[in-house]
Image 1 (spheres, rainbow, N blue to C red):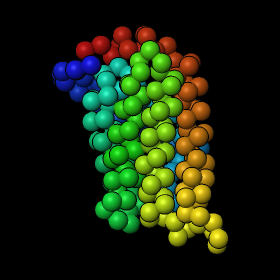
Image 2 (cartoon, one colour; image 1 turned 180 degrees about the vertical axis):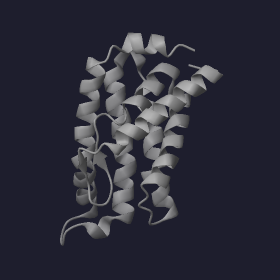
Image 3 (cartoon, rainbow, N blue to C red; image 1 turned 90 degrees about the vertical axis):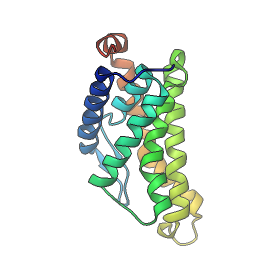
Image 4 (spheres, rainbow, N blue to C red; image 1 turned 60 degrees about the vertical axis):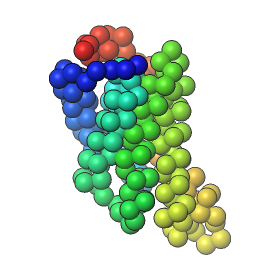
Length: 172
């Protein structure tokens, strides 16, 4: 979908980014080196992608990644910054990939986000792995610990939300 970015769309995206920020601040569980389970913190980014498409969703994810990096930084290397901040949140735009199969698209988006964090974990946080544990296993377990619950919460919320009414309210 080639979505024109109107003032109304920009305002809608800005409001959803603010809601994402607020929901991300409510941490149900926080991992020691970053990553948390929130009450649906990714839902606004998912809604942006479902409503306005992947291009605008990726732009919103990039902006949220920068906000997250400024507010709650855990920075060790410039490449790590990319794989822990803009790229994983941009990957949430994949929620708009298959609009007729929303839940599959959301799983794909979370899988892409997991992949970004997994790469960062292996490359930059492997030293945190317990003695004798592969950095690959450590990174997979570490990131799955918060991303799987976050995915489940997001899918439940999406199932409960009146999406058609929300998208109608987000008209452009």
